[in-house]
Image (cartoon, rainbow, N blue to C red; front, side):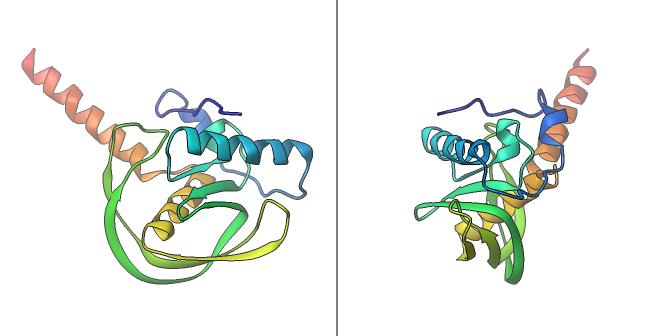
Length: 160
């Protein structure tokens, strides 16, 4: 089922929560995974984390070269760095240049609770790193949104 995506800054308290590890594949978790897949496809997003649906679990879905479900993902290796423009479904219409690893290797569980290694370079790597940031309650676009609002408010103050 397509679910509401929590937005910054309205849902700041939710989006800035740290996510917890998933300890077992319950019916609730299976349903959440299906909702994440449905929502990211419906919104034409590149990725989504459970916290963006208001659920603080370390689960994300990457929509790059197919749908990839990562449960409790951890970056085990990385290589290179590159800056690219980054967006977020929780901060619509805001983009910021972000420096990320060019390639990452991630250890995780898949939606069937199998151990997997997700190795991705380029855009898939950037998407995965962005989604893992959400697990820590951070997103580079939150700061960019706040910065843009500060500039906008300062401009309004000087016009009055």
